[in-house]
Image (cartoon, rainbow, N blue to C red):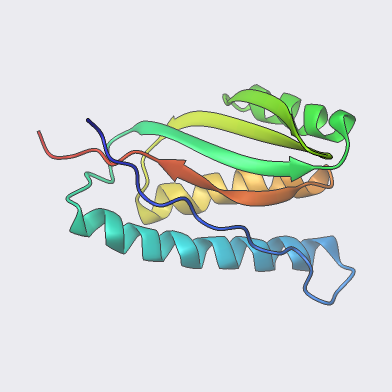
Length: 134
C-alpha cells in the first residue's frame, strides 16, 4: 500500500496589492516554502523524490468558464483535468507525472499557479504519493 505525503494547505492570494504579478509571486513563494517543508518530510519517509509519480494540483474557481479555460491551458501542457462542483465553487484537479524534488516542484508550481491565477482562480495546493526505494 502506498503512502501519501500531506497535501499542502491553501494559500490566500491577497497580499494587499492589486498587481496580479505580485500576487502570483507571493503565492508561488508561499507554495515553494511549503514544498520545501514537504520535501524534508518526504526524504525522512525515504521518498525517491527524483522518481516520476502522479502529482495532483487543486484550484478553486467561482465560474465554470474560467475553470474550463484554465483546464484547456493545462491540457495543452500535458495535464489531465477534472472539474467538479463543491457547493458554490468549482474545483479543478490537474494531474501529471513529475518528480517532486526542489527543481521539479518549483517548475510545476510556477506553471500551474500562473495558469490558475490568469483565469481568476485560487491555487489550493498539490499532493503526490511517496515512492519508496525498491
